[in-house]
Image (cartoon, rainbow, N blue to C red; front, side, top):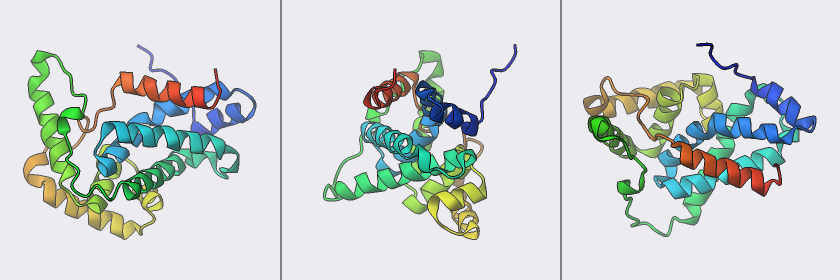
Length: 207
């Protein structure tokens, strides 16, 4: 079966700026999983993360004309999401004793995938225990497969610090994460993906 053609971000942005505004949906669907994982790394709440994603996409669309290098849209969008999450976290900082209910995470799976569900929860819980600066680097590098340079630019830290933080994160997680560092963490389900797409496109008046 032939793999679907992947259109470069720069080409999609060029089409949007030429009047094909509905093409923005392609970018939303492409980056939903990444933004969700970043949001969960900081906010640890699916609904708060979804709100942050929607706001980040709207900000990105409104500033699209100011993006100097469309090829780096992914890194630019990731930074917008990161800043949005940190802003939301600051606003809710007075909830210092807020309880994080992992049951809120939509992890519905068939019965024959129960083991994978339990493993996914173990991974999420373990990552949630990391200090934020290590957790973010781990998610961006190991789960989202961003390059060292992209991670450095996104977090505004030196590349050497990216390497150091990643190594420390791995050391902290080695006991529980050995051999299971990808794929099942912070899964962004299609129903939530559709809600984000519909909200953003409707807010921007794009049909």
